[in-house]
Amino acid sequence: MKSLSNEIRRARPLLGTIVEIGVPGRDASTAIEAAFREIETIHRLMSFHDSSSDISRVNRAEPGEIVHLDRRTHEVLAYAQLMSRVSAGAFDVTVGGKLSEENFLPKPAQAKRFDSQACFQDLVLLPNQSITLTRRAWIDVGGIAKGYAVDRAVMRLKKFGVVSGIVNAGGDLYVFGAAQPVHIRHPENPSLTFPLGRMMNSAVASSSGCFNDRAHINQVSDPLVDPRRNRRLNWRFSVTVIAPRCIVADALTKVVRLAIRRAPRILSRFGAWALIIDRGALRVLHPEGNKGMTGMLKAADRVTTAGNRASISHQPQTLL
Image (tube, rainbow, N blue to C red; front, side):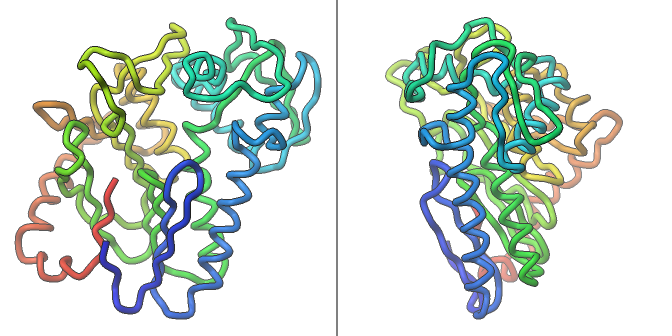
């Protein structure tokens, strides 16, 4: 990935992926370091694997026990609960138990067996940045925390006076200030990409099973759980969501996959769009009453193949 001559790009392994931050200006190192520190803090607070994290402390909690949280963990869980309500349970952080049973996550240290009937309704957020459970549950915020970390990193960059840049956490991206060309990988052939277009002041998140090995085409091997049926599914197609915030885009990729009929109404609520790529087609899910994205998608190819090609060729090609 090429960088502009006056741009600094740094990458680190965090959040179970490679996080890349790019901002213009040779004196941006301090801002980048502050953004990475914020991501590292969120990684530590919300890790399913770290026994000292907020999430692990919740997973060890007995029903009725009050667990005090960092305000950032509390905020993520509040967003998760909102997504659960609007999706009628299609998004649910209590899938941690099922993912552990299927060996996608380890058993939390010192945690008692989770209640298989537990769901998002058993998480009770309290106003003093605390939580209590009505049933024992193992929660995993991997489907939303990465997007939140991207948003927080952008906030830190802006606090240091950065007016333009990108934060890309392995498929969860926020672009602010100057527009950046963004490309999406094809779910069945990750070496093939197509242009989404130039993005600015927007979040983009993509989810699919394209990098997961499958011995057989019908084998269920993706770490995707439908909490309403308590069973795993394959992605089968790629979902890309464009939204004002990355926490929203990150969570909505799962909502679109698991509650596709409700998706247009839910997307509308959050001012978001969704693109679905499968074997034969690209489909756009519009927010209710808004068809503007179609024009944007038609323009995307012109942006990268017509008169603007020369001006884009020196810019970083961000891949999702």
